[in-house]
Amino acid sequence: MNGMRTIKEVIEPEYVIEGAGVLLRRSIAPRISNLYDPFLLFDHFAFNDPVEGPIRGFPMHPHRGIETVTYMLEGSVHHRDSLGNAGLIGPGDVQWMTSGRGILHEEMPRRGPQGNIYGFQLWVNLPAVLKMTQPRYQEVKETEIPVTGENGVKVRVVAGQVGGIQGPVTEIAANPLYLDVTLSPGSTFTQPIPPGHTVLAYVFEGQGLFGDQTVSAVRMAVFNDGDHLQVSAGSSLVRFMLIAGQPFLEPIVPYGPFVMNTREEIQQALADLRAGVFVQP
Image (cartoon, rainbow, N blue to C red; front, side, top):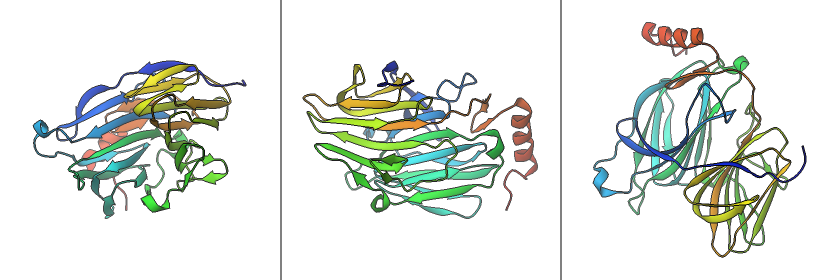
């Protein structure tokens, strides 16, 4: 399959409540249908409306079989886990956590200097052979993420390559592309993407022409197959997260914070949690 990728569908995020009462815009969520393989979930979170009351976060909770990716734009998230890790994810920082066989962690947001909290969380599936691997983190500070582009195009490269510039997150099974792209009015961005890879674009500022269709914030665009994506900005700026990766083509069984391949593996995760052996040193 050659040619420019065109839009397959446009998703309008739904408001959902997660954690300890956190209001999120959710574009995709784990489903047995696995339509966006290898991507499972994409949330857009903010705590900027005073009527929401005190900030609530995500108290200690388990994960198994997936990778969670937190990308902050404003504010910060303090995290800690059952393995003794702790830290702060600040503006422009990324945490790519591979939960593997099991981890318990919490994420508690903090407002930035302007009083805002703003960011994204992506869940990426793991193939069956890696679902019970040892947990690990790739924590990347804002200054470690390369920025590239010209002629009105600015790209922060978190994972994958843009014009020979490699993102700092590596050794991910899905061979992902994870980019923060900003186009000034009148500019165009073209990115080669291997045929067969799943491609999503989350538009969160402005509007642009994505392949053959105009998409405005706040929307998620899902693309048909092809070998490259082209995005053009018209009279206004457009900013979006570009997400691409190789599907695993495996059945999945999602259950809350667990995504495994069979019901028996989900039952085992719950049994391990009850028995206190979910987390291994």
